[in-house]
Amino acid sequence: MPSPDRHATLASRNAHKARELERLLPGWAIEPLVADDWPAETGDTYEANARIKAVFGREVLGPDATVIGEDSGLEVDALGGRPGIYSARYAPEGAPAIAKLLGELDGVDARDARYVSELVCLTPEGELRGSGTLTGRIAREARGHEGFGYDPVFVPDGERETVAELGDAWKERNSHRARAARALLAALAMTLLVAGCGGTDKTGIRVLRRFFAAGPVARKLGTRFPHKPGTLPCTVDDSGTTVQATCATDISLVKPDKAVVTLTEAWNHGAKAHTWFFFIRRDGSVQSVVQEGSPSPVTTTTSH
Ligand code: IMP
Image (cartoon, rainbow, N blue to C red):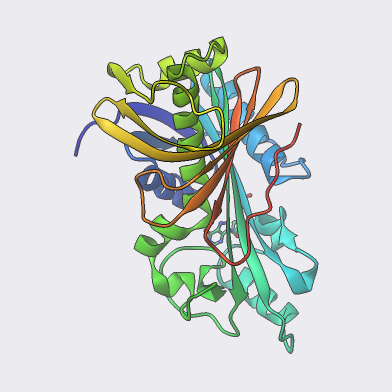
């Protein structure tokens, strides 16, 4: 196995998540944070709670650390979106939480639900974010043994089996965290594209240097950044890894300090068409949200 070229710490008490995230971020080594005195998750959004965890991780490890905070939850329509950001505190994870959920949904036919994951990655130079959701419904009984948490009762759209039956390999490609991780990688790649296309954003460039410090970065791009809607193939070589995008890109400045970039079609991780929305701010922070080719589009929006 090649040695990882990016090291990060996941500020989460959930060991499953560090293992899952390491598989989702190729070339990264993800250590779980070992700490006492975890801060209360007092944010009122997943993103705020993810940032609280990441900031705590940097207080423990020091300002040179790269720390990822993750917050996730299960939202059930029939429960008005509960347990949502309180999913971890709803009941002890596993059988007790599942029993409580099935009890609350006893006799309820409308069982639509979604998993949500937010990643906030703090580096010494800046912040990157990724969001992902997985839509589905709550089964009437628990089935399967892989995954964790509510996976034995969550049936994704287009599937008959629960996530616990579909298994960890399925989760690696399709979970809300997988989507958030891809969005995080895309945010990183987007920063690279912007810098490679002659962007002058110092923070973005410093973020890139830090992430790609392990090896020379060769950037082969189109002759210019595709600043108008149209199609232009872009290739980015990062130490032998090629990120390829067929860009049908539209960049609009929604505010003087914030650009929204809409990039349709694939990076080289699959055949399915995606639309990536990148929110790039002058301070160099980038958030990306992916809308996969699903019937129910991701509705996550950026703050600020
Ligand atoms: P937190 O993000 O650590 O605050 O907790 C999120 C909670 O949401 C977990 O304890 C689980 O109950 C639930 N959850 C989040 N992601 C998953 C997943 O992939 N499978 C099952 N349950 C999950």
